[in-house]
Length: 216
Image (cartoon, rainbow, N blue to C red; front, side, top):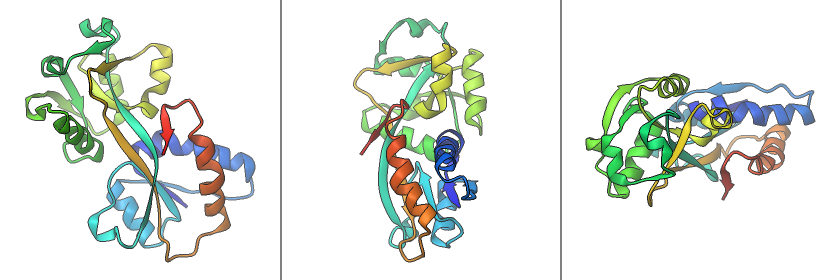
């Protein structure tokens, strides 16, 4: 049983599980996708063998769960392909204040990471114009493609749209928004051979795929 937070569970884990099933067709795999917090508790309680998350493990669980950094996932700024700034390969920080953003709820893990990184880079997040908040990455992608605004989205979530030319990815001068993906498990609970194989054989292969993920 594998756990994952929302973005990793939607865009990364199905591919990993597909690779695993090709090699171990007789092993049944379940994928549970929830918030980072709920996923962490499932690992701590033994309901999930291992999980890949993109947020922080709750403080009260950090002593009981083993947290291994796995990869860096860039949260790229994407906009409609016909947006006035889409012709520029790099935009300036001040340009961010002119844009209309579509974002996840302010309590979501990804939203918190974005705000933290932008703040460290000297960007006043309170000045960013949040046009609307949606509770789905797919809904945000559709809204951006429809010209309703711009958004920060995981590279793993927009790979197909970038290849098809449906979205434009823009760099920000001297600003890179990254989050760390981590593999978590409970070291005090039994680890099945399947869980060990997934961790040691599938995860290293996956970092070599063209997903803009860099192995740590």
